[in-house]
Image 1 (cartoon, one colour):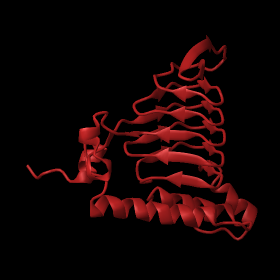
Image 2 (tube, rainbow, N blue to C red):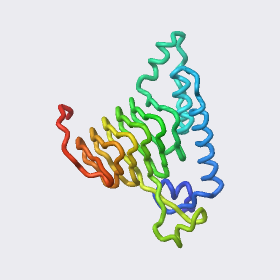
Image 3 (tube, rainbow, N blue to C red):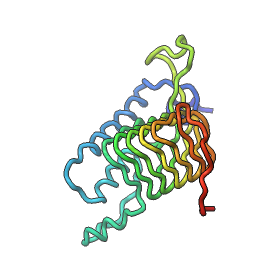
Image 4 (cartoon, rainbow, N blue to C red):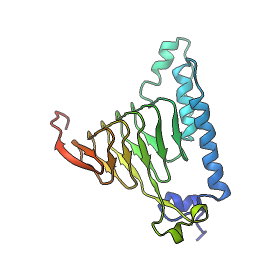
Length: 211
């Protein structure tokens, strides 16, 4: 069996070296893609914003053919995620956003492991999703010479993540949940519940007609 690359170890949530040439190049690619997205200051077509976002997440799926009517052309992308600049992303290819997701400005995705967000979920500004982590033992951690690892973050459909929320590695937030502004989510949150605080704790169940 061929030995796993550092990227392969990362994707499996194992200890890996983040400062090998491949990993540095992957982060640089995403950094420059984010810079291009964040540099858009003039009004541009929705198509262009989708194209720039797909560049960040390294999605090579071809866009549909351009329509002559700008409104009709924009309608082609109504189910695409809506991202407000500026945004910071580490690798990009580990970020999966569902249809109609809204990400407000100044959000950060440390996508060492997959970060998956379900359809119609809303992010306030300054939300930070940290799927990467480091060994606690400083002798192993060893600055940039040592290894790091990660755990996936999963956020369900129809969630509302308030401004300045931090979500830590390995957390799952269930469908329809609300996370109060400024919370630090260290543990799973069940579907259709409100959680808030540092660390976040469950406050109450949400009454809903949603199944």
